[in-house]
Length: 116
Image (cartoon, rainbow, N blue to C red):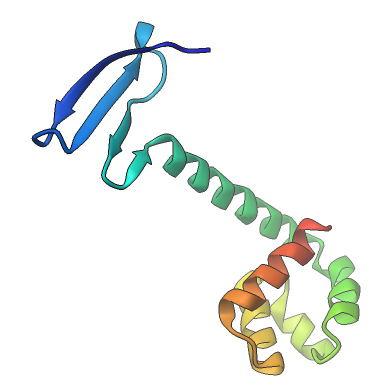
């Protein structure tokens, strides 16, 4: 478990910056918005993970089309061919066909993809 070393006051006391003793790790800022630094990098890494999953989906789209057709029956074979494993195209077409909000459809697509 790392121990925290020095903490410097910055911006007239509205933010503190702490670093781990021994110089390991990136600085982490604590301010009015809460902890920044580590939380931002983990959300970025999750985005990279999602991108990697969709890169794989593009390569395996012919296998995934059957699952997509079973889940979203309103999509035609031609539309599934046009989607070609692209998340944005799938989300857009599902939004049109089913009349749902974009964030709802994205969550549904992400859940479907994570089950693969």
